[in-house]
Image 1 (cartoon, helix red, strand yellow):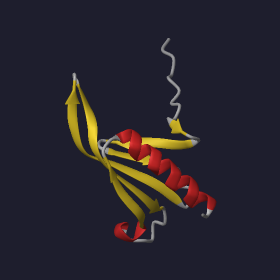
Image 2 (cartoon, rainbow, N blue to C red):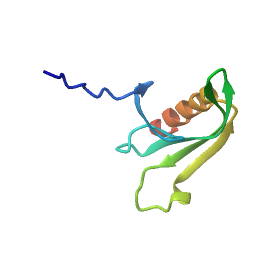
Image 3 (cartoon, helix red, strand yellow):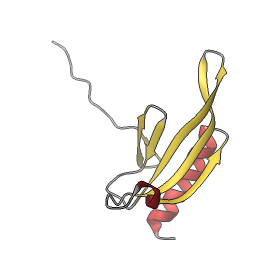
Image 4 (cartoon, rainbow, N blue to C red):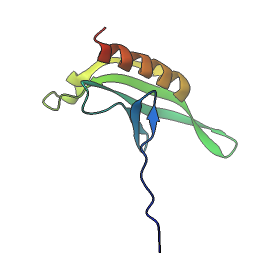
Length: 98
């Protein structure tokens, strides 16, 4: 008998993370805002590819808006850690209405 693996979603600071290729979405589509992280460049470190340039965007989740009109803030960071850090701050502030 094969056990079913339960799919436990990955979260960071209480918000879900979803990845598709070089895009990472941070936040819930049920909320007003999400963070979109796009890995623009990588470099080899040992046998792994590590992000060396990451685009960060605070976006509205309104499906009626054009994709370029959804972007509220954007920035580029030199690694994924810095991108997640600024993205988490932007998301918390936006959802709190600040």
